[in-house]
Amino acid sequence: MLPSFDDIVANLEFLDDWEERYRYVIELGRMMPELPEEAHSEANKVHGCASQVWLETRTRADGSDPVLDFRGDSDAHIVRGLVALLIALYSGKHASEITQTDAIAIFDRLGLREH
Figure 1 (cartoon, rainbow, N blue to C red):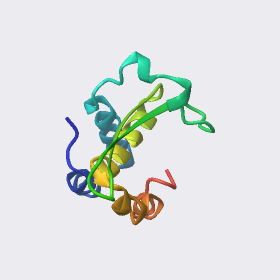
Figure 2: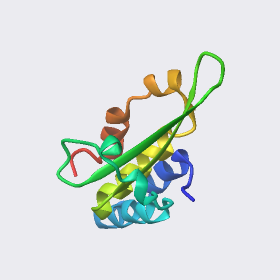
Figure 3: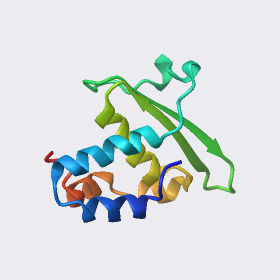
Figure 4: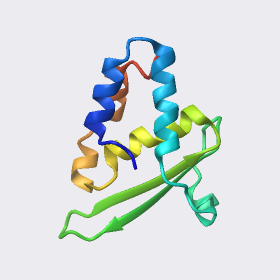
C-alpha cells in the first residue's frame, strides 16, 4: 500500500542525495498494487511517453462532485514510481480538488522535473 502523499513529500525532502531519492521513487512503484492485465489496454495507455504507461480511472458518485480513483503501471521502474506518486496525490479525491492541484508545481518544488 502506498504511503500518503504528505508522507511521500516528507520522505523525499528528508533525502538529500538524488540517488537515494531515485531509489525511493522506485520503491514507491514497487508498493503499488499490480494493475490487472486487462487494464493494460489501449484505452488506458498514456500516449506520448517514452516508456509504456497505463492509467485506469474509475469514478464514484458523490453528489455533483465525483471522486476519482486511479490505478497505474509502467514498464520503467522510475516512471512506475512517478505514477505511484501521482496516484498518491490524486486518487480518492473529488474532481474539483484534482482540478485545483498543480502537479507540475509540486514536481518543481520536489526537484523532480529537473531530474
